[in-house]
Length: 559
Image (tube, rainbow, N blue to C red; front, top):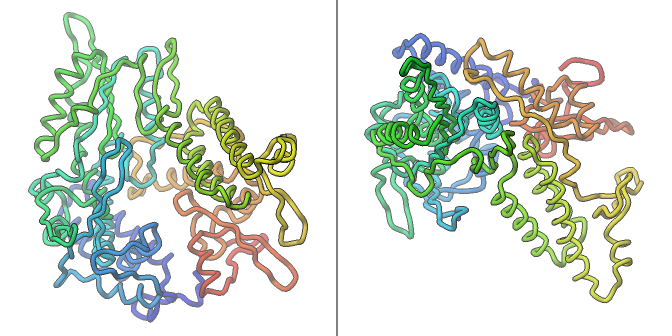
């Protein structure tokens, strides 16, 4: 943000004047104080700091900013209200008040699941969404401080690859356990006991009750909610994690090394959880079936939850199992983690669907639609054993594109089609590409991305006890995020040069460029001279809407 336009909370008169860098610093400071108080078990201080945060102007501004800049910003609730203008966003800050707050009913929609069933999704209004985000800012430091070490779903600084890497560490060595319990909780979000949540979740009870008891509207009728947290609410994921936290501690406390018949017995029970999906390893199927499983069922029953009988199975590692879109299996004693067959099938079906829907589209438009899909799937699996899978994916996409080209020119020969749609780029023939003119007047090729061009690398797993709200972990997490971002831009020479030149900071607001924030290249014209800068996507949008670009980083100067 341009510092000349920034103002303090008391003097800010518009959305553009709010200094969001100062807001993030202020809120982060309060969150770190909350986490410190939780570690010291000073729950009275925790409550006081939560009240301070939820009544802060900066926290309210950040809550509005988050709900108006995410993917659901164009999706309204039952009141059909959207905050899509700067004035509307600024007025929304004043609506986030505890006194007199009453949550409106949720708008119920259904989205398809992989198994063909429908998943209920509840959409709050913008005001309710912002209130949930505001109170999530105060609840998340507690959740992160008390969370299970090997819980990875819906947590800051953690992702699916962290969970997969922990699976590898638990199962790869020769002395690793051979049996795995694949657990799945039946209707986790929809069945959590409200009484348990109200009794154990440390936040404002009256506000929490509003979130839980708001009800939902389906086909014009109001339905009461007697259990569960709404799938679609911003705070629901934090609550769900806090409900399931303690499962790992329970198992680790019970299954420890002990002497049996004069020998040291190790049950080898390891736990990995991502949201409501989890796996538990064990030295034998009997331990998993008759000891681990009943213990988990008792833990869940207290919270109003049950295990899904059809999805909860015990598997030998030589047979393999699917977890988070990956297949984990040992081949002759060697553990390999590959993309699952179901995931490959689903991805190819999506790609073929895009090609089928764009029969009459130009080649450039088709490439523009395919590249993000290919890039996203490949980046997800590039940390696994995926080289042969990527080659297979490239071959299947080529066959689909060849059928697309032949259909457009059924009266032309194969050589004519190949010459029109496929070109030699660098040292590769048969590259699906088209010519396009650059801004400087020169011509180049806009090409389809190849999955096999992506290098396979080992993912650096996060340390178990890393807490983004604990001061002692700040340096480690900052270095980790910087390195992850540097690896992500390594394939693009321009982005890599700009990232290193700007020391990993946005050229407009001076904030850190991370995988979570993303980065975008902006061309800055000063007279006849053009200079590239790396900025946040939101900052890039501001440049092209209402804020004149004055780079905070120029040449060799620091931001």
